[in-house]
Image: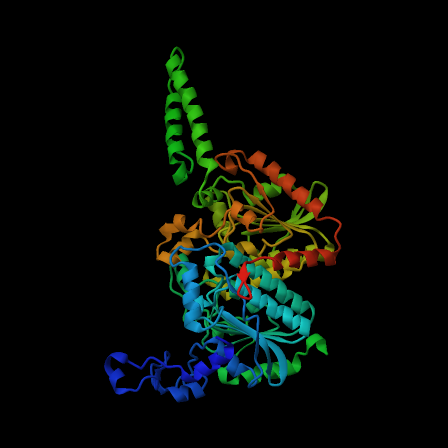
Length: 290
Length: 322
């Protein structure tokens, strides 16, 4: 389905009614949502108008890539690129669930062809290359196709001297493509380094959750790194760390706030201010210092 | 009798060896039958080992790659290079002994050296964190990459790690940033880079020093997106099914050559590199010297452009409905 249909679908999407066991019958479908943070019920329309941020506690709910593009790009400016790139099943992976089946399910569920959408867009009037990962698509893990789309986004930004803005959310490297996925970390990092050499700005926005091989490659090689409040950003997942060190982890560990405190990201930015912040940044960062 | 570490799949060999050792303790003079039995056992052991090693599974190779007696980065540094100078510290936080960094001379060539450094024995392993670097290890590595680039010194790296250390400190000090910065530097380094997989090649921690113009793999070394145990834990909530997922992960030297990621395999004797370290060290030396020779005479721009093209070709996807 073309990306424009997706934006259509956004208008029609439904939410699971709150506390379905008791009150589902009393509520019309899709009118209420429940905040995962404060557990309060929110009018769906208010929630969406607030960009899926809880008006009460400020909790940022996870959003999909088409929604992300809608709220970052100037209206009507997004033109998707490389939409026909999709995963093969090069290793014919069948451990656990067959990869081919997982891909089919993810495509049907999301209407996307991969875990990231990329394209040309404008943000606050600045022409950019914009990419957004979609966690619903096999955790937006990075296999060959995701790695290729990201690399091409870097190359397009370089060729057209447009700043690159990437919004990450990913479980890391995609296990089902084995060592080919690992190598995408190197490929995307090379592309990022090449863009930096040319003096084209790159802004990354880390959203919940960003982890593993994506964190440890292109995601953190940006000139400016922003993150959404409360986003979990890590290399190794908390469960693995706890198993290794056999003690529980400090509160707030691996959150965006934790990372800004430790000096690894530039700012935690509320989703409702993100477009303006990126636009302002791009006022300062001109390709090649022009 | 205290016995050396025995890998599960070598247990039949170990049993024969025990039997042989018992027989050898007996007085064989005037016992020709006993002597004949000893001879037969020795032949049987060699045959059994040859058979087992002629068709090792991926999981068996992982076990060999982890064998405690397997030659380590330190052995390669001591044997292959002369005039070695170790360079320590990341200039920011500390020195990570899980990562070796330094300069050395190989066949008359001045090179920079990086390598994951596992220890020999418990004490050394604790100091070296079992070869699992923390951010300062990767930052030290990057410092030496930059030094090599600045002075036009080719870089040789030795991969042998289960991965970056998964701890609180690692995350607090930005291990993801440290690895990513290594990748950005290494992939654009304007000097020849030769990587050698000598044992374990676990995930981002291996990759951070494992991207170059040539990848040489020992026959039983692996290079993987994730360890088989961790993969099994994710898929089945149970690390013990590692043997099932190992082949799927395409992580052996042969897999890497087939996928076009590795250039050359250095054969190991039956039983693994630790059975005849000298022959393996010599073969690795030859392979590295040859690779460095092949990469000579390119301009800095050519080196960087070729490496980018090499990386650019990595991956399999479909496009345009094909």
